[in-house]
Length: 122
Image 1 (cartoon, rainbow, N blue to C red):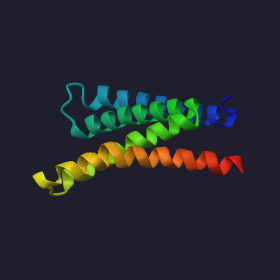
Image 2: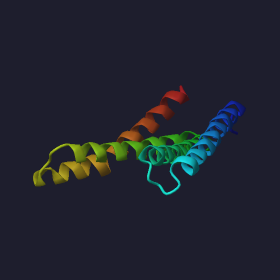
Image 3: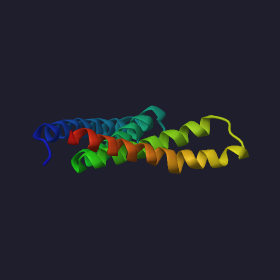
Image 4: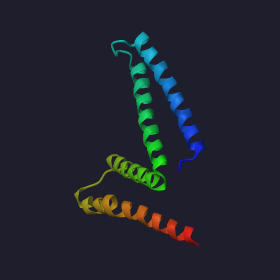
């Protein structure tokens, strides 16, 4: 069962996001009705991104420990991918990168879950 404290936290964050969305929409209607104000458009994009992040985090928390581990595994995968776009690599790195993405990263999370189960049984 989900903790009532978590539900209150999610409700509070949701309330703040609703308020931010209303303020953002009012600002967009008054200052950028045609989408020509880059500051207001940036604010709207950031509010939308926060909605996505909070919804994903809420789903992960409600799903329990497995949901949180899966969320962080996907975040690790995305972070590794982003890191690789910023660094130089050549064709010879192909197999080591494949191993990092599809062997080492999942293995790390699998081993962590296994060690957590072993530690909790003692």
